[in-house]
Image (cartoon, rainbow, N blue to C red):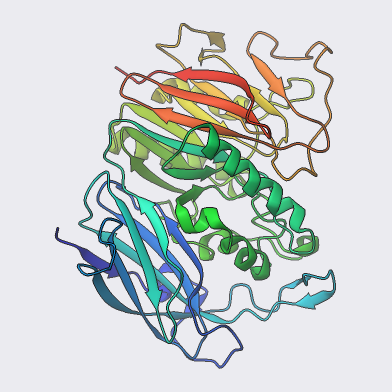
Length: 427
């Protein structure tokens, strides 16, 4: 197998990170290690990690899982770049005390190409210490599966939020194993708090899987909204740099098997100009990347779950009809909502139109009460199913993709199947 590993230095990858050495009190081993999709996931993958600023070089070692003793692994040395995006942000310690983040570190962003399709890999980062082993699975199988989750608002003083979400991921694993995880935003309470990212990335699912996701409003902010920027989301991982101007590494697209995923950032399309820029980019991505399944993901809900009123559906449905988007995923509202395939505002037999789904919250703390018996104020003809456990809600989804159809199943914390949706490819 021919492997070509290349690093995109953060000086290019992140505007706020520049080459340099500053002494800072961080761990000597690499940390906040994450696996992110590359543009084509059957032969490529992206990686992100950080080190102490005294460590300017690290080795990435990668090999198939079947190479138990790493005898045939490939080792490549890379240089990091100074990142100050999260430094001095007002935050909270683990014991709830106010403090300012001490977050000056060297950031590494790497892309691997030449991988074997449909293969389980392992990798580790070697500095003065060796990191724990991380894993990912390349695309290429005709049938694959994923976990979909959102809105767990990691907040270091309250570990229960993280625990609830990680337990929910385990529940999805127990329902059916999967290859990677898709999140739909608000995985941190304050994206500007690097402590929260560090704590989150220590969790087992970040060691075991590739993660892809969208920027949520909480991921885009600091405590008290003193600063809002997509830099927090961008610099916490290594997503593809194929987005439009000012959204590189935040809005992006990637192909996993037969599915083209298009990831949007609601925070930069709140006005008409921002929406137009995003929609023109989506048109271009779809035109240049034909695929049997086209999935658009954003954070803000399509409908308001309490009363059914239109939210982002009103801004995007006409374009989705035009482009033949098969599935639209969102989160944020903390109430699960699903529709049948809709085209021109009407239900179809599934061979045409878009299925709209928004995930529930999963932190067991920030769910939303609703009355399932109350008539919907709007869109009763479109909304098929709603669900929430109220304030203490935990739920997630399992996705199975085959050439014939996608199957998306909503699970509660106990593994009960609550809703099932089918999405058919464009023929």
